[in-house]
Amino acid sequence: HKAQRGSVRLLGQELGTLSAGARDRFRVDHSGYIFQQFNLLPFLSVRENVSLPCRFSRLRSKRACQRHGSVSHAATQLLEHLGLAASLHERRADTLSIGQQQRVAAARALIGQPELVIADEPTSALDADSREAFLQLLFAECRAAGSSLLFVSHDQSLAPLFDRSLSLAELNRATRAAEI
Image (tube, rainbow, N blue to C red; front, side, top):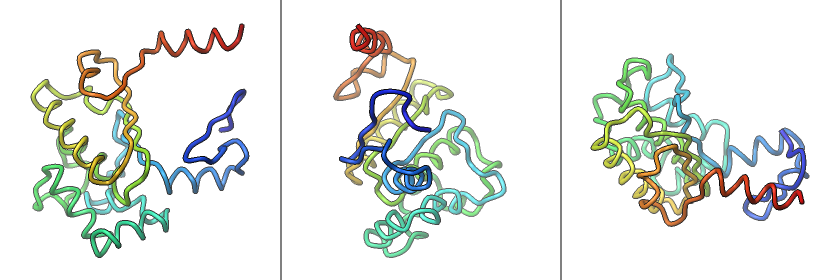
């Protein structure tokens, strides 16, 4: 959807000037998403789920191949770096635990080195120890890929782990001030 007012600029591109199809291509080329409910395709294997963005984006496929030799190898490397055992890579996504699904979703977001990774409450179902371990892996993979991470969470205790944090109250104040 287009912005109803104002503008959205990402990587120097004004998104409102793009057609719907061009916006979709731009989004898949330059951003990865970790959804709160993960949105894995249950009938695909773990590796197929991770590789999916590269089927829709030539740019991300090219980057994955340049860095790892093939999309499949890129998926394997990401899954291993995120702590998912090789024995699980060919299993159907719907057979995994919540923590394992979360790692698959993170690998899918990171494959092909998108410039922006958007994570919506990706740690909400994890205990404190698992949350900390997952975040450290996510930060390391974003650093290695040169990706910026936009992380949304209701958990205020996570704020110190990030370079910058904003509360919804701050964003709402900025919006109201702009309207006056």
